[in-house]
Amino acid sequence: MRENIQPDARVASQMKKVALTRGMVWGFIGGFAGTIVMNLVLIGMLSAVGLPAASPFSTIGDTAAGFLALIGIAIAGGVPLGVAVYYLLGLVLGAIFGATVVRVDALRVNTTKKGVVLAVLYAEVLSQPILATSPIILKMTASETWQWFGVSAVMHLIWGVVLGAVVSYGLRSATAAKHS
Image (cartoon, rainbow, N blue to C red):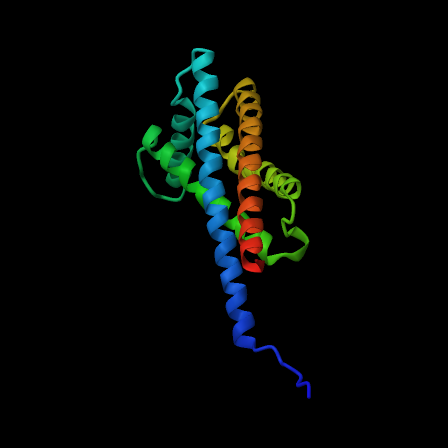
């Protein structure tokens, strides 16, 4: 006799939590790896043209300090704050991407190509409002603004490629291990 096996809601809920955690962890790893790669390329690029390697971190730190000042929080800007914000955003946004692709069926990354394309789109679209704060708060000239957005677009492309590759690899390897 065959019995109808009813899925246990607790098991299904637990499986969703495991998948969400797995996605967040791989996103965190991918965000960190992408941030490191982006940082190395940026430092190499700036050094090659004779500019200070820490200048983007100074810009990020000064922007963050200026933004916080607008809401009444006084904090020193500069390189240390810029590095902290840079890496924190890379990690958090990576984890959010990982969590999203495991929770939204249409965004499920079942190939590396799809993972990379989604991550690059995510990086480029999500970065625009964040990037826009620097020219506004620091009162950049038009030329500085174009340069800021141009270099940032390339850097976020790199971050997205690494994030998408790592997340798609991690999620596919976890799925393959589960099924073997």
